[in-house]
Length: 592
Image (cartoon, rainbow, N blue to C red; front, side):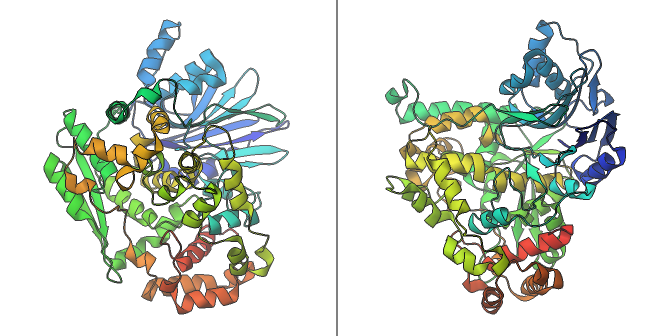
């Protein structure tokens, strides 16, 4: 797990070593154990390393294989690197290191850009071909590892974080009006290639992009999540599906224990993280390190779920760590959490992950986390209304979208009103694609391949990597997700959602965790913006830079200031926090 950066010129000249170094410094916390830089003519590569696999200097990056004429910077982990290494050795390849980075290099040489189809893991990497002078960028199937881009006719820059691109300078840092529509409509989800800034884009997941020396490029989209039954699935009963899912989940969890350092678990006390702990215990893991977080209550709403995480920790005898965050510490830490966001993210979970990651990083370097189960197995409340919906797009928008286009235009400032239909049109186009006939499957496909990438997955990456911590998400194992896509929607929606996971869980973990109300990282102080939090948001939205930008209608802001708790989105988010977080992020990063 690391941070990568690079500059590629599309003309004669030499890439700027200082620019690459600036981007690396901006994301040094992603890889505090080592750093390296390679400058070769018009191509410059930089890397910040977090040592997880092959702790020796032989796996440091940028890695150069002079015999093959390939150089690489890589962020992530290839869990099946051992079997791939054996396969490549049988083909005659010789290895000088013991890690997964060199396996990518050899695999690329052996199989070309489609080598990514053989990888089981999370990754973003850049490879430079010495002889052709091509540069190849790639991102994993679910976009677990980020890759931001800034491209002009003269050059390309890439990095693991958006702020690193900004730090390099020479780009348009104005707010993108189309991305603003997404942010305000789709609960802050801004899908690729957009970002909130005009001058920065992101490589879509499951994509390999090959740049020629002149700057032209071609994309290979190497995977899409299939939905619907395969031949023979019609004969499977509920027990058959449970057996298939359980076997795939066990393999996914075991796969993510591959490391040369200890691996722990972020334990919320919910079904997903509890299943991870339970299945690891069944495989003989003893003294597993687990970690939970709780916050001070606000407005009568409890801010922790320790009763459930304690239950699991005691049941399996884990080495459990609890972090309780009083309101004063939360306020003090908010700027750090906002700074850690590669893009503005409105979910309250961000501060929870940020503070929990700080605690976890004091003990270990790698954790497993339960993100992705809701999107893959149908755990959210908006999936049941999709079943049999005559207008799936409208049903999805009613449940998920923060505001309709007409309301959006009323809430935005005059200079930013541009119709507001882009997010709904995006969903409509996505739902119309072949490969997911059932309305529930349409929503699951959109959430698993788009919303998930730019909300929960991005949140986990940003907040853990801010403390040099690697987070692994077994529910986003692509083989497990492909099986989930075949499971009949009714089995996923049963028992109030994630029915098939709950059925599996009843065999493994205490039922109190399974039958509890759906939980999350509750941060009541950010849901009910009051006192010092209201002052913080009001100051940001009333500041000179905010007035100059004019993102929001003045009368709308006054209504929010007068009654912050009275304006809650369909997903139970605070409208004033949504507006305020965007402004705080822009000011924190000096952009917009």
